[in-house]
Image (cartoon, rainbow, N blue to C red; front, side, top):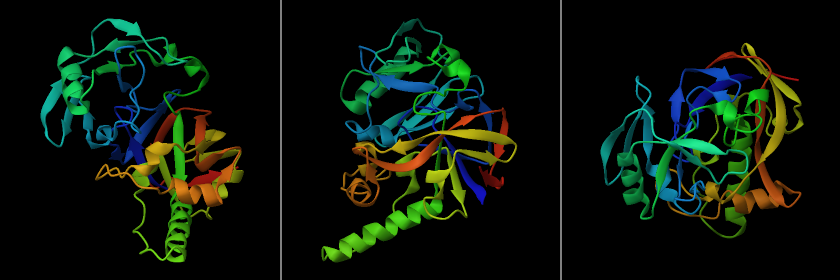
Length: 264
């Protein structure tokens, strides 16, 4: 088994970036989900209600700001966040730093509702982050290509049973992974209590329950029924549907594409 892909998401709910390597920090991968888009009350704006977030490309600049682009929007360079810290509506994050006002206006136009860009200036402020607990949905989300292939097969079989034309394979970006592995048996990760990837050892903190964000195509932003319809048939328990696992690092270092994956 090997690590086939590494992905980070500079802004939560926006496009991911494929990377050849990434540093593992106590709260997740370096540069992953340090920024977010919130409403005026500090509540995170959810991609399931605002899929246009999936059209946003964000790249961190060398000085610590962002470069933003999206279809129908001009490119915007956002300077490093130096604004006030403001209260957040998240249960385990009390405050975050406001970005430049131009970024608020950019996201407000994109989404058609009041929005503000914030940065988690100090990850340890997030409840539990100092204990390797992770950031946002993290700290690190792993999925398996073979598990996705099995899910694609189930979706195709279900379509044929309904007399429908089988759809093409799902884009793995729907699941917003940080680590994509290759070479495991389908859903072998369900049974893992720990896993080593290259020089980093992780414990498996939980399986990942899937929300309605996965039914939006990350390329077209069109809404469908998959994968939740098929996951509900094959991967439903405790009232939820499941795909992938979440990991907590036991030590720090660097992940690299091609690293050996060693389940424990």
